[in-house]
Image 1 (cartoon, rainbow, N blue to C red):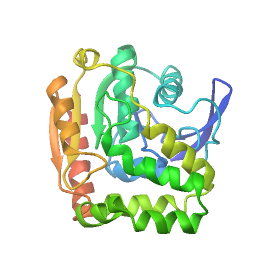
Image 2 (cartoon, rainbow, N blue to C red):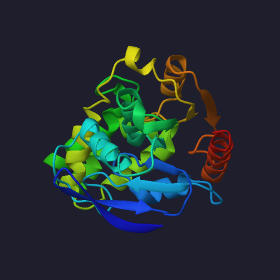
Image 3 (cartoon, one colour):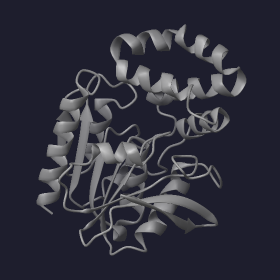
Image 4 (spheres, one colour):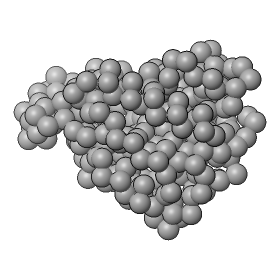
Amino acid sequence: MTRRWFDTNGLRLALHDDGGPGLPFVLQHGLCGDARQTAEAFPPDHAVRRLTLECPGHGASPLAGRISIAAFADHVAALIETLPHPVILGGISMGAAIALRLATLRPDLVRALILIRPAWVTEDAPPNMAPNALVGRLLATLPRDEALARFTQSPVAARLAREAPDNFASLLGFFDRAPLAETATLLQTISADGPGITPAQVARITVPTLICGTGRDDIHPLDHSGRLAALIPSRLVELPPKTDDKSRHLAALHAALTAFVKEL
């Protein structure tokens, strides 16, 4: 995959693009993730043109401009407008919220929708995002080592270490994500945000939709996938818990993506 720069709204963002003649498939990463996350989620033998636009403050894209799911969705919309569209549009976690917003408000850009481990339905600041917000607040107010100690001693950390170890490991990784001040800003700001759409608007989505949820994941509750599937005519796939066996989780995701795309 080639990285190049995409200029939009006065920003220069990193765009990872497979190139080639395949159908464009824009897959967006999660909060504090990057194109490596979407590459891992993709089937190795895919026959589409895979693209990921790294949002401001993510991957190689500098933190600049407005920090919100709506702003990030605007950047992705600007990218899609430069491609043969409508495209297959998907996302993981925060990326799923971006994709959901665009499928709702810009249906002209979306041929099919894929939501992987969604962390939002429609509400702002859903309770499942509270652990991310907590890490952001600690990083914003305390030296790194003290913030880490405070987090690891918290009831939230104890619960996640016991019930959702993959979530716990991801949260620990934020304490080593440089620059820490930017990580704190992203975690606090996006955790308090939402896709800015209503259930009634989501229910008007008519494009083919795949929703992939998983258990033992408190930050991406399986219930969110079920609620979205109740609003959108879709194929709902429950993946093996990532926290139990990451390789099985990814293999199931690859299989679900491959089967869905072949039917388009």
